[in-house]
Image (cartoon, rainbow, N blue to C red; front, side, top):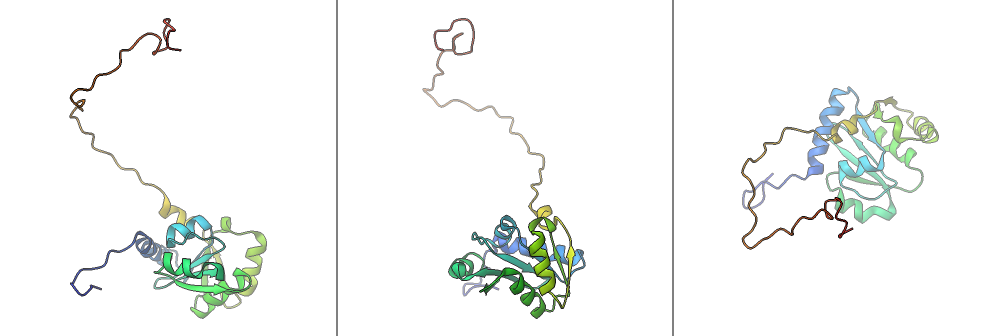
Amino acid sequence: HRDAEGVAPEVSAHAQRLETLRSVVRDAEVDGLLVADTANVSWLTGFRGDSSWAIVTENEAWLITDGRYTEQAEAEAPQCEVVLRKDGIEPKTAEVASQAGIKTLAFSAKAFTVAQHGTLNKAFEDGELVEKNGLVAKLREVTTRPVRLIHTPLKAPSGFTRPPRTEGRRGGRGGEHR
């Protein structure tokens, strides 16, 4: 897509993260991934509210939230279809997954209570919940790479003088600056 001047729009970090997660969904051999941890939902979608879950498939993403966050969700997560829930999040999540044709929905057990898992499992009659811990966490890991050091010494600005060092400042026996 390009604008009227032929310039491609900048892709947000969240849209890039969703694209990367889509390849993870493919590799995990599931139809979709449920992201329920608040920090992961925020990192992935840009949405900073709480009480919300996201479902990601190879081609689509939904943000399931409640009416308190309608405008905020639409503004902060434009790459997701915002789905409002009136009651519990588990039944609405199962409904969205079923309507999307998801048969296997991966999830991280660390993000759920036993009660939430039970309610979601019961509501998701058309499909199967598949435990796949850490799929989003792997993407969030900070990778380190060697940094090339600059070997040029820094010079002090002209007119800069360093205060004199005394034994007191360095913790020595002088003690006058303790």
